[in-house]
Image (cartoon, rainbow, N blue to C red):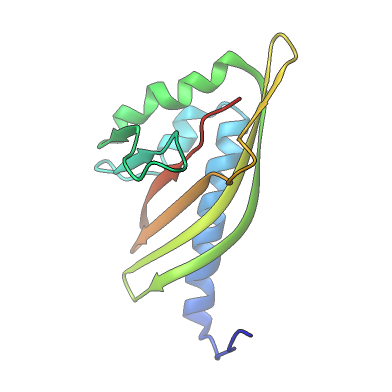
Length: 145
């Protein structure tokens, strides 16, 4: 059973800000707003993608906002995408930094009308890291079928 503790208005606001950041990223991705999505990341962001859920080594690692452009542009090969977000768990939260994990299941519909979804063995993980008012994100994704 979980233990409930009181949460200050500032902490509640920080928790909400992290969740809204995750939702904004998914919203931009689904609308092909690469510029808007890139604006959510710091210039020195560290973006990591895991294509194999069983491999602890990332399959892709990017270290700047500009390096994200081709990743976000790659979504244009799909006719439609929908990122379904699950729970967000705040792992750490201080006055100037926070970490959280949000489960995300992306659905991609190609022009041939074939749907590609993440493998069922585990949902992709979007980990948001908040530093002051600037944010970075690390994306954990699974190979698509």
